[in-house]
Figure 1 (tube, one colour):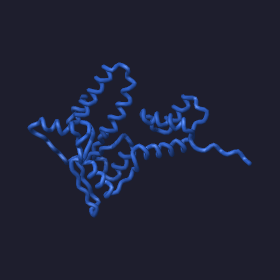
Figure 2 (cartoon, helix red, strand yellow):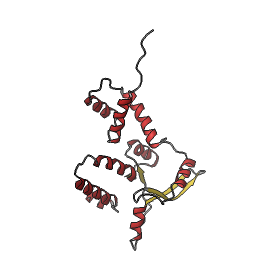
Figure 3 (cartoon, rainbow, N blue to C red):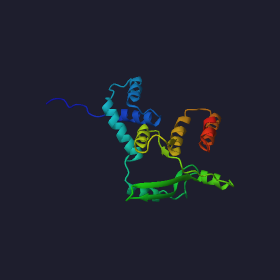
Figure 4 (tube, rainbow, N blue to C red):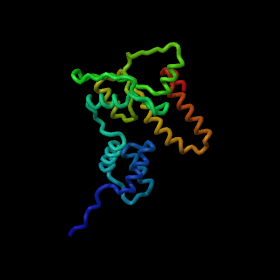
Length: 199
């Protein structure tokens, strides 16, 4: 009988790809270049890596699609702010219309609520369209197709914080690492685009 073809990506290579993904290396070609640098015996094909990344994203973040009913359930389940860290996001309020296929959602963190408690005046403007998501370009492209290009892209703080925390571990000096972390939290609290740009 003919020898069996070795199919799929070996487990040790999958682990390297997972680590690369967690460090922010997310394009198939950059992963291939990194695997070549590691001088692996067998480099997976672009298609194999692409398929593995899709599985990895699904494992990490769940299905990309969400129905209005699923969104309503998710919003309801994420309205509690007890037992959350000060920078963990939660739903303040939401509205979902299944018949009109329309939704509104208001999100915050305990940190932002505490900041609001310290202010005498709050300026709230809901005339802007914001896209709050992870760094995936596909999200931006999809949002732009549906709503047009008149919106502000905001990085999801939970995703950004996890990614920055992992990258900051490469800084050996704890004092430098803490200073950078404090600067990032201050930057995240910017209340306007000009203030953010100055940071």
